Image: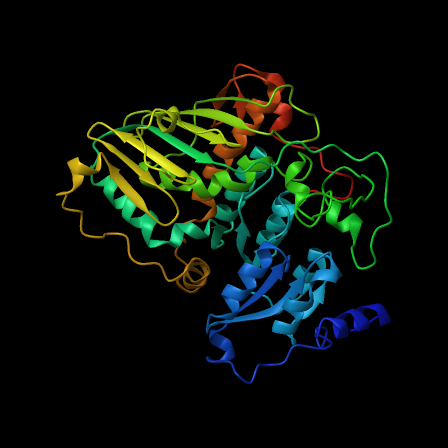
Length: 439
C-alpha cells in the first residue's frame, strides 16, 4: 500500500506510524484465527472510540480495518490497532476481503448508506443510534438486514444494563398494573444554531466532501462556540437537519428504548409535536414536546407516550408528585407508577410498594452490548437490539421531527410509510441524496 508523506507524518505524530502496514496475525490472539470475528470500524473518533475500545477488550474479536474521514483524529485508534488497515472512504474499507463484520459510528446522515453497503457486501453490522437519519431509511435498512439474514445491533448501550432489565421485568409482571401512559424526558438542547455566511479553508487531513456524504454541499466552517466545538464537526452536526435531528435523534433512542422494550411498542398511529416557534428550515428545535399514540398490542391496551426535551418536563414534577430526578421515564399504571433513569428506578408511592415481592429475574445478565452482538454473530441468532427492533424504535423517534417540521399532527400509516392526513409532510420522511450517493 502506498503511504503518502502527509499520511506518514500524521501517523508518526499520533504514535501510529504502523497504521497502514499489512495485517498479520497478532501474537497475543487468545483464540485461533478461525474463531476470531474480524471487524472493520467506520468512524473511529467520537462515539467510535467507545465501540473500538469495547471490541478490543473481547478475546474473540480482531479489529482489522479502520476508517475515518478526519485523519486529524485517528491517532488513538491506529495506535491501538497498529496492524489494521486504514481508509478514509468506507467504500474502500468494504472492498477489503478480510472483514466479517462492520461497526458504523459516523454522524447520522451517513448511517444508512454505510450500513446498507455493509449489509449488501455480506457483513454483519453494528450501527450507532439512531439507526438512520430518515424514516424511510430505517424501514429499508431493517428490511434489507432481514432479507439478507445479517446479524445486527443498534448502539443503545444502556439496553445491556441491569437496571433497564429489572424495570422491564417489573412492568411486564404487572407490578404497577396496566400501563397506558408513559412520560420520557431529556434535558439536552441542540437548538439555536445559525448557518454562517462565510466559508473557511478545510483543514488538512479532513476530507470534507466525504464528511458531507449524502448531504447537500456547503462550505466548510469551523467557527468558535461556547462548547469549543466547530460549527459542524466533530460534534455540532447534531444541530442541523441536514446531518442530525437535534435532541430527539441524539437521545430518544436511548430513553424511549425502555418503554418500547417493556411494553412491546412498535409503530405509532398518531404523532403530534410542538416546540420552539417557527421551525427553522436548517437548524433543529430548541425544545420539543411530542405525543405518540400507540395502538393496542394483543391484550395490551393503547399507550400514550409523551417525549420532552430542551428542559421541558412532565407537569407532575412541578406539582411535587415526583422525586428529584434526572433524565428518564415515568410509567403510569393502574396500581401505581415507576420512575426510571439509566442506573436506578423507584416504584411510587414508595410506601405502598415497600413490601412488594419482586419477580425472579427472567432477563439474563448481559454479556455487554458489543459482546452480545459478537455472540449473536457466532450463534446466528438475533441480538436484542437487532435492526427489526431498533428500526421500529428509530422510526417512531424520527416521526417526532417529521411532525415538528411539518407544523402539524400526523396520522401514520406504518404499513405503507404514508402520512394519511398530511401528504405534504412526507417530504420529511426521505431526503434527496447528493449526486453520487444512494442506498
